[in-house]
Image (cartoon, rainbow, N blue to C red; front, side):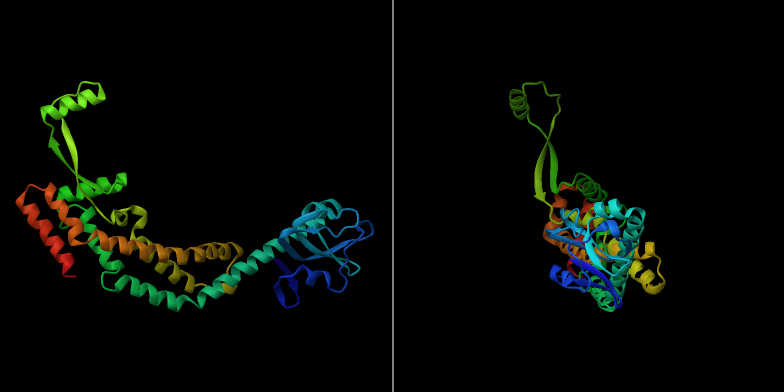
Length: 303
């Protein structure tokens, strides 16, 4: 890819032949009697391009297109530029690279600004649709927060499962003497009694919806919606180089954040289903807490 600075601004040129056919371009420029005037382009290819200096011609995959004070053009790599044109080349190449980066970073926010209305409509649908992000977020809170409508035993189990990234729900029972004898024989060690055995009850689907990095409010409200609001309050043409770089970097994350949120919503739907949460009834002994969990599950199915 070639980026060329023209009187119409920065443009992209695909073919190297278009550069070589430019008036004044020389494939065999003698740097001994030439003075660097400007850097007008840069390029990077998979195939090697031969250096345009007569005393070099070393193949390279990236470099710059330069002009001399007598109106000629050629292409050189960074090493040749430093060697034959010294500080002038280093200063001009840094400025050209910065100008290209600023141009690209400014183009991205402008392009993004035309998409904002569609993105906001999409976010509204994602959040407010039936069993969408808002529903998922609101109904997950009782599962990970005490005294919000779910038995404490269920909350504790889910918090531990989230911390360990383990979706297996287990119950604990007292091991029989025979089971302890068998374990001692297998492990060749004395096991202290009483001994308890963990038995699997069910694999809980969608547990990843509870992971801290999958908080839908953080992703959709605090990241996307808040940043979009802040972005629209700024004048793109007045943004500094650092602001452009920051917004350009953030814009690159928007699509992935939306896709990630949609995936989390699907996980949340699996988690917040009657059949998925029903096994937790097996680990609760208190009848009032059983009623509490049944009420919570019933509320999910009537949403």
